[in-house]
Image: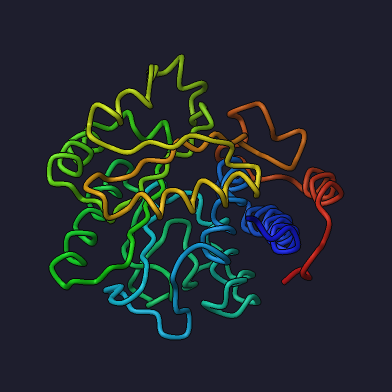
Length: 284
């Protein structure tokens, strides 16, 4: 049974992450607010509740703890906010987003040793392959931890994903949870118009995955599905979560359009967006 008090706490964290996203992208005048806002709830749930993680003892090799890979690496504003607010590094560092020499670059990088980042990413289509390698390494090490990877739905138009999914199903990589940010939008428009994904659930089923589907902008539903996904691990099949989100979720003028995929808000738009998002944990 869900702890309603904890659900409320996580919703407040996600609200603060949305404020962080707007402020980071606005300050840099560069970045990707749309998908970041849509995935704020998921990443909050993952790093503040679901994953078996050790922020103070982070290891790039991930031994002895769950691992997360951001395949759609452009939504770092959401990831960095959730990492900072989960204790991986100081919240004040969010102010350095995309600045020269910052550890918080536009896509995740490993050269500066930022806690929480296992691999550089953002070349779309590659994240699941890397995550499978990490999952297989855990099996060889008899490490029972779980490997998570987040991909975009537009990203699934890259063929390498399907080679990775075929491998995961055929080789029974059952310590892997693949989450698809299923917002049905990408930089050029609707995924249905650019390259229709058709019945995505049927495809994952055909590739040998256990499939869950639900609302990625509902904290109670997210927590329920992520717990079911964890329980499904270790049973011979990789797991897929088709997570329906709204690009720009939480800011009315950013929702329902692909135009905020990679467009920063100006001063007036920042103020309008922040007015819709309560400051719950304190701005950085």
